[in-house]
Image (cartoon, rainbow, N blue to C red; front, side, top):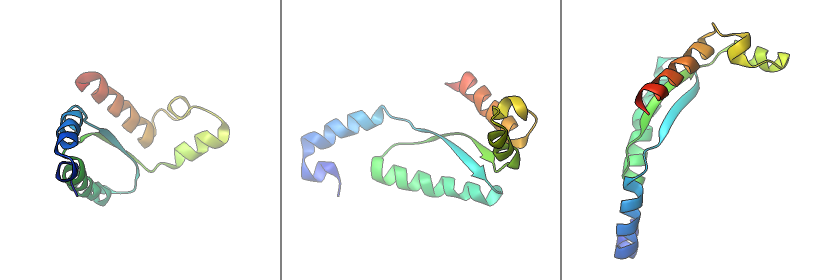
Length: 100
């Protein structure tokens, strides 16, 4: 049930507040391209329940090098900067720097 159906004034205040919110999402530990299908599902749920849009900043594939960095007690971006996960993190950082 929508807030405005229960309390129109609260519904209006909620709509104003939600209009100021734009979540940024990073999908982590993706196994393959099919995992991106969740984006459409997530968009639909958020739009229906909160009436807001989402920005997708990127995705990070599942990468065994991350677990290895953790086991070694090293920062992943330093110890495996050429790994798929590290490259994805660098790309997300570039997008944030460029668009946010």
